[in-house]
Image (cartoon, rainbow, N blue to C red; front, top):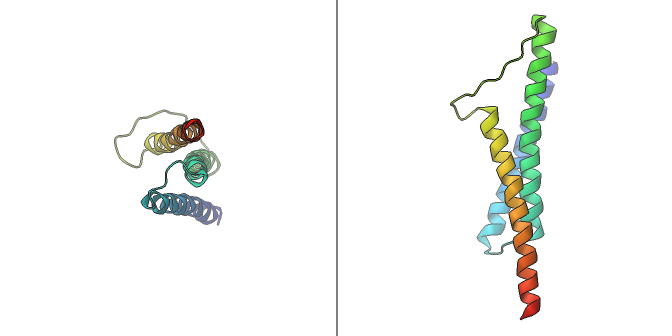
Length: 115
């Protein structure tokens, strides 16, 4: 039952981040850049993606401790697209991109005021 609940939480968070990214793409298609929706949406999607990965890692850790009665800590680098490190880096990229958009928006506003 706990696993099912966690999977529902993971899936709903991932669907939320995909929905936010979908809204961002539609906003980009309108050829408007550096809007508050884009800045906050990129940041929120990145944070949600990172949050769900960290939640999965913690849940797997406690699952092994509770059900297997063993403690195992390791660090591995995987070469597939499902690697948590890759997903975390995508989330960090989205957060960084939101900061770039925020800086660009302030520069654009400053440029419009000087003309």
